[in-house]
Structure formats: structure tokens, C-alpha cells
Amino acid sequence: MKKILITGVTGQDGSFMADFLLGNTEHTIIAGVRRLSVKNHGNIQHLLDNPRFRLIDFDVSDQANVEQVISEENPDYFINFAANSFVGNSWTQPVSHMTTNCLAVLYQLEAIRKYSPDCRYYNAGSSEEFGDVLHSPQSELHPLRPRSPYGVSKASARHMVKVWRDSYQLFAIQGWLFNHEGTRRGEEFVTRKITKNVARIKNEYVLNNFKPLELGNVDAKRDWSDAEDFVEGVWLMLNQEEPKEYVLSSNETHSIREFIEEAFNFAGFAVEKCEWVGKGVDEKYIHEGKVLVQINPDFYRPAEVDLLWGDSSEARRDLGWKPKSSFLDLVKKMVDHDLAYG
Ligand code: G4F
Image (cartoon, rainbow, N blue to C red):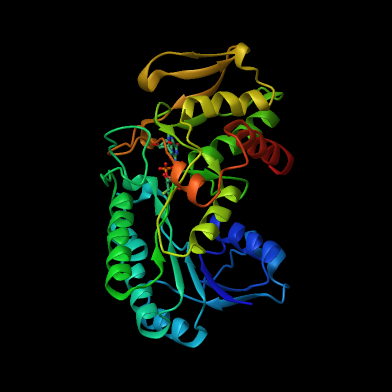
């Protein structure tokens, strides 16, 4: 029985990872949570009474705290999902992104090197590191060309993880995770924003009194998967003989526009009865004369990643991993959940 320290456990990925490990292994979870005056335990409420799940106060951006936790707990694995993960916010809070996504990783690597050198370490990497892509699809060989302060923070952390791995022979890796979504996804991310608003509009439509969903660039394309499939991939990556980093992706790309169409379709607004009219900021998605979606340029980003499209063939070959859910499975699951629970 091993000890696994997970940070970011109240978020989507951390909570799904805890569920996966408690359900599929005998190991114990130490769940590092930053103390907040109002608790945000919604995603882990069902785990709080599990004897193999223990919460500890943990602030990844406090070096003294990181050193104390690693030296006292001596974990066998450290899975770092704590991050500032909303790209759109990273232009207004670039320092906080560098601190949490990069400097904190340095604290963790140093603490592992000093106190727990056999600990296997995973840091959450991102397809945003590829950024302004040169070719598609993107595999592990694609150069890092970030387009946002968020992308820079993750790319910098990647270099540090490699340097610490090579210099001190640590099992330290940072996989490239393409977009991954689900019913625990934060509402600021575009997929959940869409499915929550589809559910709202569905309920308000009959009253003929609803506000359209407002979005930014609907032509950007992303490679979306189900986050529950990805946590299994991360665990496989952590349990190879040698430390190697992999891309996890669906190997398909879809536009935000397609996500919108499919989400409304699953809620009963058939694609055949809807149409896009207008151009640019005046574009609207209309169903029987009523505006479901309109563009709000406030949601445009200072620099956009227009296209992400992963190539996870190495992970599929070496780890025997592949996503179980398709793009349409994912959209349906999120819409059904938000229609049922609001
Ligand atoms: O859902 P998003 O905010 O995700 P984004 O920026 O792709 O980042 C996510 O995936 C990364 C992996 O590639 C992670 F590393 C990162 O932490 C995060 O999980 O935006 C997706 C796209 C963008 O092109 C954005 O411009 O949707 C576009 N978009 C259009 N309207 C919008 C909106 N995004 C948001 N959040 N809100 C909108 O209203």
C-alpha cells in the first residue's frame, strides 16, 4: 500500500484522480487542500469519510509548507493538479500564474530531491504549451510556442521538470493533456459554460423570456476528451519503468461552434431547425426566430490559440491507453447532467 499526495483535489482532475485511485488501487490518498474561509469540498464530499482519504492543509506556493509536507509525509507519488488553469485570466493575473504553475513546481521538485528522492512526481502539463501550432496534429515532438501567460507558465515548468529529472535522476514527468472536460468542470471554461446555459435556456425557453448565451471566438478548435479517461492515462504514465512524458488526447478536433450545435441538439433544439446568421461580432445562433447564442467581444482573448489537435499514438502504443468516451458521448453526458441538476 503506497501513499499518494494529490494537490488540486477539490478541482475536476484531482477529484477524479482520487475517485480512480480509491476505486482501482489499495493506496492511501493524502489530499492537499489550500485553506479557504469558505470550503469548496463539493467534488470530494463523497470521499471525506473514506479511511484511505486524508485531507491536509497545503499551499503549493509556500515553499516552507511544501518542504514540511514532503519531509513529514514522504509520499510514494506526488500528483500535482494544483494550478491556475483558466487561460483567459492569465493576462490579468500573470504573476499569480507564474507563481502557482511554475515557481510552485520548483519548490516541489526541490523538496522531493532533498527529502523524498524515490517519490514519483507528475505535474499537469497542457496542450496550451504548443500554442501557435506549426503543424497538426501535435505530438510530443511539436515545439513549445505558448500564446498566453498560462502557456508560458506551463512550458517553463516543463523545462524545470526535465532539468530536475536529468540532473538528479528523479522520476519526474509532465504529460501534455489536451482539453478534458466533464460534469465537474468549472463554469468559466467554454464547454461547461455552454452546457450550463443550454440547460438554463431549455428551462426558460417556454416562458419566452431568456437571455442568449454570450461567447467569444466560436471558431477556435479544440481536442476535447472526458477528464475521467485522462486520470487513468496519468496513472499509467506514472507507473512506467522509466520516466517518459506523453500526450493524452482524443486525436480529433472540433470547433466551439460544433460543441454549441451538438449541445443544443441534445437538449431538443435540433440542428436542422437552427441556423447561424450574421458575421463576426454580429453572428448569432437562432432557433425558430429566437436567439440562443450571440457573440460578446469581451470574451475574445488578447492572443488566441486557434487550433489544438493532439496525436496520442505514443501513449496508446506504450501505455495501452486510449479514451473510452467520444466527443458526442462527452457533450451528451454534460448536457444531460446540467439538464438534470441545473
Ligand atoms: O474552455 P477554455 O477556456 O479552455 P482553453 O483555453 O483551451 O484551456 C483549457 O485547456 C487547456 C489544455 O489545452 C488547459 F491547459 C487549460 O488549463 C484549460 O483547461 O477555452 C477554449 C476555447 C478558447 O479558444 C476560447 O477563446 O474557447 C474559446 N471561447 C470562446 N468563447 C471561450 C469563450 N472560452 C471561454 N472560457 N469562455 C467563453 O465565453
